[in-house]
Image (cartoon, rainbow, N blue to C red; front, side, top):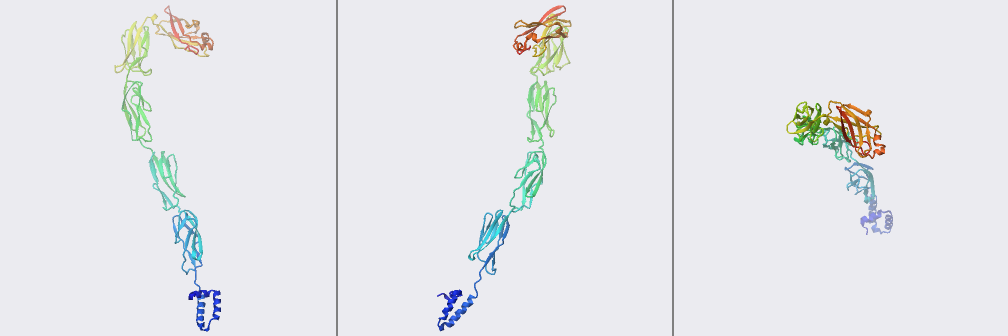
Length: 506
């Protein structure tokens, strides 16, 4: 049996109802009343079907910010009916996600499709979902101005609003990178003195900080040595130590209180000049800080420019006193003669570095130069002789030279300590000692008296050496023979000169 409600449902079907009517025509009369009741009930029930949801919908497009959540509402038709059960789906859950209640949350910038379904009713609705970034509305820096010392650094902190801005990438820029640079994390490095502006930007928004870079001031100076001792011509370097070590201007001005005792150059090199004491000072250009070093210059020894002198009566010689290890360090000294009757010495007074020796009579004396402290001395032997013993020929220079292409060769000669008597040069002969093959007498017209104690002889180099090729192999040693007379007496003097291996006298 179908039962009552099953029968009604069956009858409500058009075909079933028609068949049921046919059935009724064959029923017995005792069932007529019951049949009428059933038929009436069926007709009444078939006139009113149960209503159902026929449509669902959601907004066609939804926009939300990254990180934000928005609830999507489903509209169903007819709205008077209870809402069916829904199933939510997203086309790309990396862009946004949705829960069972229709709440969508943006994860990253992009677009996707949201779908809602009523599976039992076979109904579907969808919409486009756009996830957009959250843009900054303002940017500010932790400082609007700052002063840095050269070489130091500062980190600027940028604040961006709102806090949930999607892209927080900041572009940092320096207005002048020769003054200050800035890293991607906002660290500012002072690299040069001056002013510049550091700018932080995000999108079209900017914030800036004015940077002033000042030098690192000198606070003091010390020297590597406070006391030094050195000898004349010696050199010692002392270093200036600037505080702080990273001071911007480390230039130092050096000065010696007495440069006649010790000199100092721009690098702190101290050189002994004369015996004594002085102070060397280093002063900073920045701040005028100074430090000093006491300098003692000691005298190791003395020597004279001549150790032996042969003189004629009534003649003079100039003599100098030098530091023992230098040809340039003239030393102040006090002069004396052991026998002033033979020769006296006169300077410009105590503490002079030169003196004039005056020969007075035949004999021997010792000329002495004594240092200021009386501890160092140097001497020279002076012999005053007769005329015929006193004349000495010196070729000047002793190593003469002539070069290829020269018109003639010059030998300069002088007599040491000549008398006031006239010296007559009779002849000058150039002698080749290697083979005795060349003996050339300078013509009279080529003898030129420069003074009463010197003369110049001119020789033709081709005559002496032949061709240039021959000159190149000359290895001979030559003598200059000078024949002269004083007061009617003849004298011969020889002086050796060495030839240049590559031609010419040397």
